[in-house]
Length: 224
Image (cartoon, rainbow, N blue to C red; front, side):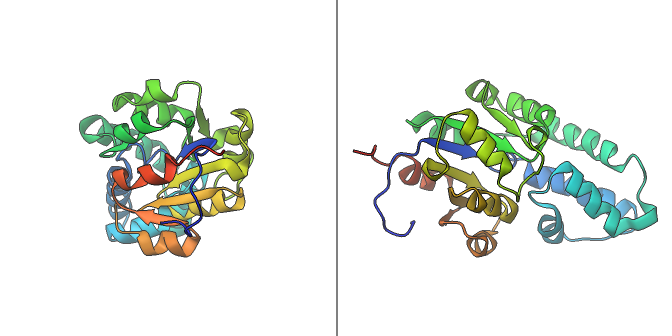
């Protein structure tokens, strides 16, 4: 639980997309792991998560370039996108329990992702969640600096008329936790892949590994 202070109903709940709304993190990292291996770099899946989880497309490309050097093909990221979409089309599902959380929310909610709008629309559409977020999708493409800078979360809050201190963010990466903290927002860490210690170290107010555990923290009493 958070620090024991009375919970208030958030003005806005901001969800990350990959790994929080749609169960895509493992799929995309398995694709990336395989592609790196094809170019002579063997990483465990845990090492791939550690290096790339929560990264923007630009930062992911830069990190691949650092790892592969001149061996990185010019079309690596394009092919990664194509192969990820193929993996999503075959296996992508909503995160277990997230639909029930969205149904239970009395507060407005939105999605804010380091991924591009096109990717969000595909993954949310493929899993049936897109209608819940129409008009409330925010991407790092919308701001000058992606997470871990606070710009994306602040942009979402300003657009939807919420004060940063009244926002709750749900994240699954240290990058996202750092961005929410920098924005002055309360952040809860979803640790379904065992990254709880990392999320706590990044500053998450609480960590959980089942979506049902989130409900008491985002459905608090209205301020009175």
